[in-house]
Structure formats: C-alpha cells, structure tokens
Length: 170
Image 1 (cartoon, rainbow, N blue to C red):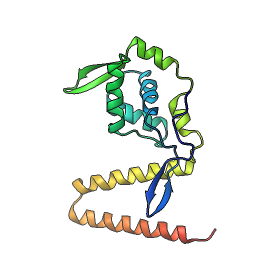
Image 2: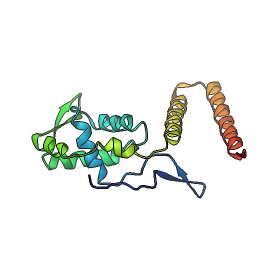
Image 3: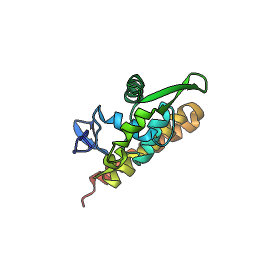
Image 4: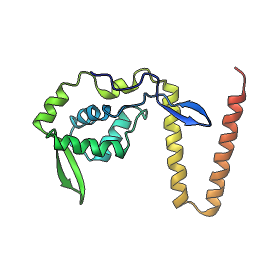
C-alpha cells in the first residue's frame, strides 16, 4: 500500500512544544483508503465511518467530518459508492461493484497501519482525555451551577496533580 502517513506520530502544538498523542498523523489521501476499507463491512453514514475508524484504531485516529464527507462525495462521484437517503436527510453510503473491487486491492487494513508503532500508553492517555472532555462538555448542559463548580474544582485539581507528576524526577 502506498505510504500516506508521517512516521513521527500525531503531534499537536501546546505551549510552544510538541505534544505527542501516540498515533500517526494522517495525510489527506489516506482517508480515501480508510473509507473504502471500513465500508467493506457494510453500509454506513459518514458518522459511522468516523466512529468505526476511531474504534478500529483504539482512539488513535478519528477523521474529522471535514475530511470524511468530501471524500465520501468524491467516491460517489467516481462511482465507487452510492448514497441512499435514510433516516430523514442522512445518507447511507454503500460500496458499488467498482468500490468493492477497489477495496479488494487494499493490502493492509488502514487501521493496522495507523496503530503500527503507536505508543499504547499515549493512545490510552488520548482516549482518557477524550472521554474526560466529553464528560466535561456534557456537564455544561446537564449539571447545575453547584455541580459545574465541583467539576471545575476536579479538573483544576487534576491539572495540578499532572504537573506535580511531571515535576517528579525519575
């Protein structure tokens, strides 16, 4: 399979230094192969594609809607996918015969390549942070003012404890 990723790992900027999250950073062309591969398991919505890829990579990669939907539309335009309306305005995408043929040429499952060499600890950390962010975001809508303040205190305390751990010598 053609190489479509950086070897250096996924990186994000934080405080002027590189933050490493474990998985590789995907290049634009890689999503095409991933969409075809995941849809070999059955039809799905764009959200399903994103969720399946996140699941298959243990949270190391979840492509954004801004990369999935244009790619899916391109694959429809190329005749590799068909879109059917379902559940109101949502489109259900399915491989055509040509799409199945193209997917059959994929030598290695993209999720295997994505997780290759990823630091399991960094992947676990990224997953935990994502879950924490989801809980905190939900609290903004579901928690009372008192509960929100308790959550702020917990998050602030967790941040202080993390910096204490980072300050420890090995």
